[in-house]
Amino acid sequence: MTKKTIAIICIAVLLIGGGLTTWLLIRVPRSQTLRIFIWDHFMAEGIENQFQRYWRDHTGRRFRVVIGTYSSNDDLRRALVNERADWDIIVPSDYMLERLVAENRVRPLNLSRIYNLTPTGTDSIVRNIAPEGETANWQFNPDVIDSRITGHIHRDTTAPVFGIPYLYGTMGVFIDNRINGLREAVEHYGWASLWAHDAELTPTWVSEFGVARNIQPSTKAIGRENYTLARLAMHRDELLTLNGQALADRLDELFGAAPQDGRETFQEELTEVLRFLQRMHPQRIFESGDQTLEEFYSSTNQHHMAFEWSVSAVYVMQYSNHRANFEYIIPEEGTNLWINNFAIPTNPHGHTRNVDAAYGFIEWMMRPENASRNMAWSGSSTPIIEAADELFYYFDNESTLFNNIPENRREEWKEMFLRAFFPMQFNDIMERAAVMRHFGENRDQMLETYLMYNFLLG
Image 1 (cartoon, rainbow, N blue to C red):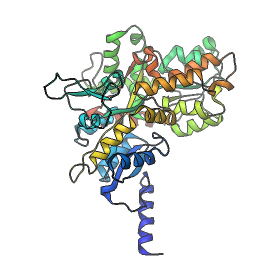
Image 2 (spheres, helix red, strand yellow; image 1 turned 90 degrees about the vertical axis):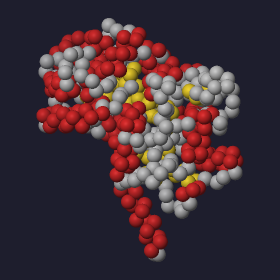
Image 3 (cartoon, rainbow, N blue to C red; image 1 turned 60 degrees about the horizontal axis):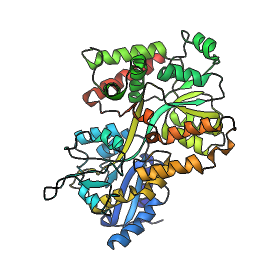
Image 4 (cartoon, rainbow, N blue to C red; image 1 turned 120 degrees about the vertical axis):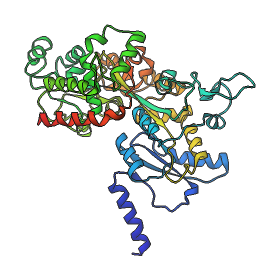
């Protein structure tokens, strides 16, 4: 075995051991390589090879696309901070994009460079809204991209744009519908159902909904999500009385880091949330999300309900032979609208090297035919209206996915699935959804408090 071969193997081991799934074993000049760092299972298999052919035909330049994957926003940031990783495109979620902007780790995007690669006309994903003869003012085209998605990320239309929404979804409660009364109990308690099965509330579950006493819920050991969902649960009664802009404003407050209800400090808010969780916890250990999903997929689940992202629930309901056993419920008080965005990182040694190809890839992935393919593959929703509408029509009218659902439940189950996969088609979901914000300096304080909560659960 040559030294060169040993070196290549060592590089592969280091990369895999560091938690990154990459394909770097073929030596290609960096100037001919487009490096993309993206969520695991969020890009259709083989689509990068199609872009390589498209880019060669479009520009006459040969490129190799290198893919790296991660499983959390924190993994992404650690790679950018600690590993001096050299990526041309990254795909952070909403709050992480905010954080990376604040840390100067992503560069503002020039939307006109995407427009220039897009056919002119109404199908362009961006448009110039400036009067003729004045300086160009490029904005997302609401006829092409759902403005309810872009509006959550880019509220100030005069501010620089750092991310282009790629895929999005919601958070909900994933249940085993074979448990008598469980759906009704979750609909009644909302998010509190993840924590509320304790000695105080169990008699209500049993007497009112007929739920078995040995029900086992599962949440994720993730401070940010449990903290914000607990806030929704604490304010459920209030949220159910609101609608329109008042509801939107209140949800934004609850998904942010500012103290609520007259509390003067964030620590006071954390203490109140911690008391709620201590009172409501169901006295069980936290399970990893992947373990719970595997149980649901094979219908061997020891847990009967779980907090899940829609992408995971849709995946199980699409591909498990036991899909009829499961349902995804978005609590009525509201949900998180998570949005993964294409962004171009800064480089510790200067500008990102292949900016032209990066813009070309982003524009190409936003084309309806590619957006539809990535949506179908991932189980996430695309903000590209034409692609989402086409896929919605297919599932609503042509798909055989629902054939193994008992006939007496088929239409109801089908609507539940469509609501999980296509939230933009249902105004009542979009009106009660908010994006998580970057917590800023309060983030570490929040995580420390959450670790204390896990310790107290013991």
